Length: 114
Image (cartoon, rainbow, N blue to C red; front, side, top):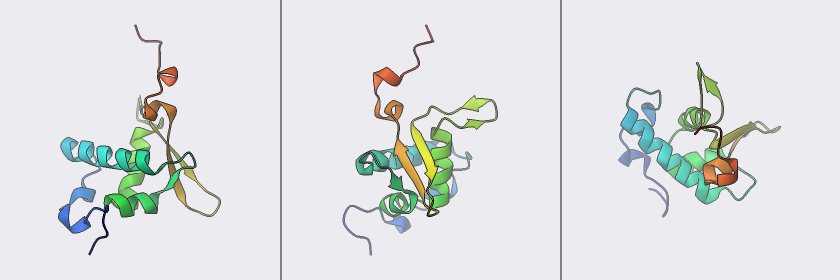
């Protein structure tokens, strides 16, 4: 039984198993869900990945992969968009926070492109 405002993990068949890039539509759906939850919960101090997992119904490992791709981390020759910052706290908790670029702050946009 899920509480109000929380996604039912059973209602999301295999939703958290495809964040490895096998299905672009599933990745986009998961990314939107994760970013929306992060934007709602991030009060400037970041949000723990277990809390986001509980809210979204996605596994912590899936959120870690999604947010890594949405951070400024380089995967191969490509750098991510820098919308999310991940940090490992001293107590061992992974925390995610929305960056200014992720919030759509135009001051943080890359103006080097024509």
